[in-house]
Length: 291
Ligand SMILES: Nc1ncnc2c1ncn2[C@@H]1O[C@H](COP(=O)(O)OP(=O)(O)OP(=O)(O)O)[C@@H](O)[C@H]1O
Image 1 (tube, rainbow, N blue to C red):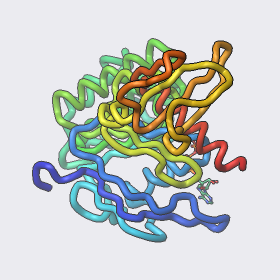
Image 2: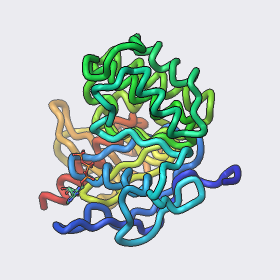
Image 3: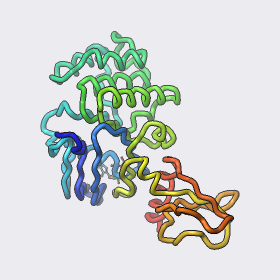
């Protein structure tokens, strides 16, 4: 892989199960060193996408390259770590055993690096995995996933079992991992507000399709939030409206592109937050599916 080459490159990627397409026509690229928020409603195709990146699932259409090659799934690739929702650990192992297992299976293992994660989570090395709290288990899983010094780490809802303080602590550790080692982190989560603080790249899926993908700053710059009266004409062409919501005070629109200026003084515009951007696209996708 050379500088500037994307870590993930998907071209019309698709996966079909017996009930139909779980992911369709997915074309996107993720540059190296990004902290990527992967968002979408339940059943959007996020886990399927992560499975295709690891090679555990085979594409039913299109292709995907990860770190410059098509994932084979035949043997563990030390360049890629995947932490699935089930966080596979051996409950009868001690934490030390679990790390020893990681070390024996991975030639790129960095014991000191793995131990840093245990220390952050205050996880006793001699404790059995089965006796740890859900939060402590996540730190062990992260130590195993990041102890191999991967270029790309895929985390499927790692924050779901954590209290708010622990979530921030995990996000800070991941941000530091990216900053110090240039690791690309893909983080699937339903907690938009927390992704907002750390992610500089967004992938938004809904109903098996990519709805939004790209650099967060560029995406935000390409959109505006408009606030105005509850009734009456809107100040932009209807084709620019991604999402429209009636609030207690009036109407709020997410539009793209954002207007340079508004002639009607009853309307105001401002840049969206990442949460407003993502919610707007999620709502609009939901309405499309419901229609
Ligand atoms: N092994 C499977 N066999 C059949 N259908 C599947 C399988 N795995 C996923 N699906 C279907 O594919 C679609 C996408 O599922 P996927 O798990 O990728 O979504 P998700 O965005 O990760 O959802 P969640 O946020 O609930 O984890 C869903 O309709 C799901 O029912």
